[in-house]
Image 1 (tube, rainbow, N blue to C red):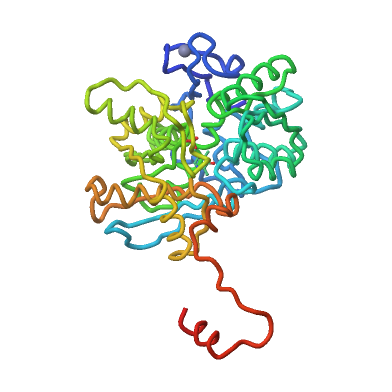
Image 2: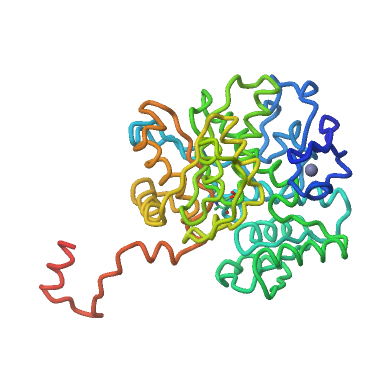
Length: 408
Ligand SMILES: *Cc1c(COP(=O)(O)O)cnc(C)c1O
Ligand SMILES: [Zn+2]
């Protein structure tokens, strides 16, 4: 373990725990735990500046455990594309679609698997229907660690293809996602497995924060905004934590404003932020959790409280956009820049347009949009939003058809 990592704290009740005691949510109040470091012991000048390194071990000084030589797969080190002026702002896209399993979740899985291995667990399990399951199974396969996923009754089968192909054991729970979370917890406690369910496992945030470290390295100056596609709120809280830690170790002197981007049918965090700002109390209320962007369809955000804090403490914002705007942003990213993302990944771009139109993001500001997952994850969304092919007969083409092809 990293000697500068001193354990964890609970923002719900103020409890503090040693690293050994940090295995799940707060035992006293059930809130997600946050890993803490003795920041004075970390050399801000040297952080991330050692010999070039293709793995997240580059950031070992601010991780709970070293991730050196754990997997031959390349996790992280994703490209940051400068796309010039869009909507009057300087736009950058942090493209996570090229991760080993095709989404940002690989950063989280690597850390959860690393800690699990150091503790001798025989298997890593989680409740998920989508990217987290695919990611855990993928990196587990590469590290020789068996994995299991608990899926709810109505899980879309296409989302499981990766997890099954990577060899995860799949258990279908006859109930909702919350029921699957519950079954996973019981089985893990009984079997001594590690529970990697998002925000239940305190180490997922530690992995996801590395995306902030990379953005800080890749840009000559800290951007004004980072826009984060958000469901449970774990990426949003992680992006804030990453920049905040860079500030604490003296590496940067200001934190970008975090914009939480949600779908309007699944906007519990946005709703809580807006109520807080109106002085109406910021407790999280469950919502329907319905959107075509299934990776961010969440009824009760597991890391919602810390995501709300990320917005408030960074003086950021939260916004909900309709599915139509999300799908249209997805199609336009592909046509305009050759970037193929699943619907959830395009929420940041749809939110960018809305925040610029509203005047929240101002002309000339620099903005990083996270593109969190690959378009190959959800081919049906792309097909539904693009033109049908033009039908042609086999064989000789008539002059009328050739004329039609010439002017589509
Ligand atoms: C999981 C996921 C998100 C949202 O992350 P949260 O931590 O649940 O807010 C966004 N986009 C993609 C592609 C994801 O897989
Ligand atoms: Zn607590």
